[in-house]
Image (cartoon, rainbow, N blue to C red; front, side, top):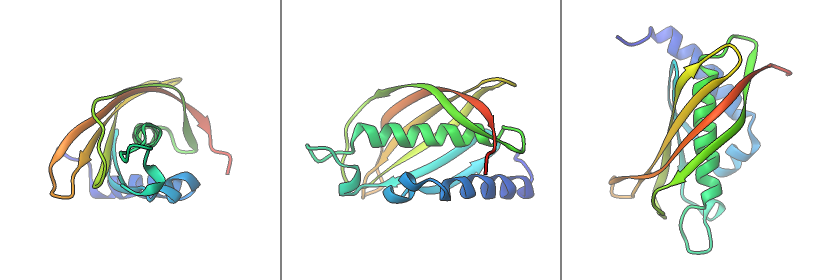
Length: 148
């Protein structure tokens, strides 16, 4: 059974407001696709801003997208008045792709009072719609007081 729409709407507003404050994500053109309790999906279009010297998506861009997706999944379970910050993550790059866009889905694995563990899967969506695994990431986050 899914969460009530009002809950998902409030979570989406919380995540979108935070995403709007991230200069790097704006610069890269990251879009919010989906929000539900413990899960967030983001998209990153291919451009010269995210490419590496061989023409594919740069690993740093993939890592940033995975980190942000997992972080926002964690934010959906953090108490009101709190933000989250990543203290570590590990990523495995599975394949390199160019063109199209990347989608990263972050999911909370365990939400505790002091730490939150999340994982993210990054897939490449080719211009023809074909989806391929790109990277997997696991991270540890901590809730921190909101300072704005």
